[in-house]
Image 1 (cartoon, rainbow, N blue to C red):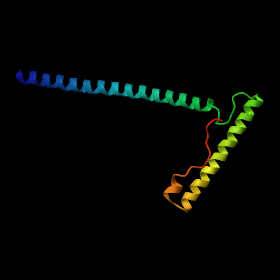
Image 2: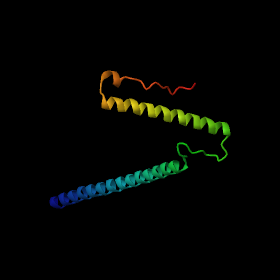
Image 3: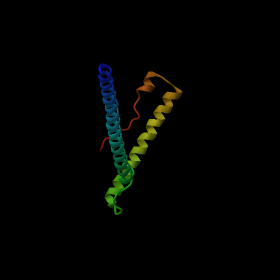
Image 4: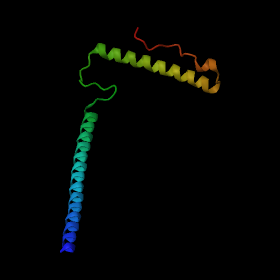
Length: 113
């Protein structure tokens, strides 16, 4: 009788452990599926945000005011001129490295005038 009781207790303990493992696996799989759905929703939201955002110089409306167009062209020309001067300073530093050439300014400023 005593050995039968031990067998029943061991069987109940073993069954309980198997049940706990199965329930833990089920909850971890449910959590993993929830995280996958959240990642998919986030990726979809990011993809839609990328496709909706216009390019750097693209205009969302086709009819750009002439003053805005002139302003954009002026700003673009000023930026291009500044970048070319910076490239010249860098090229001079590469060919003649010195502390003076390292800290030399290009002579232009991008501040609004």
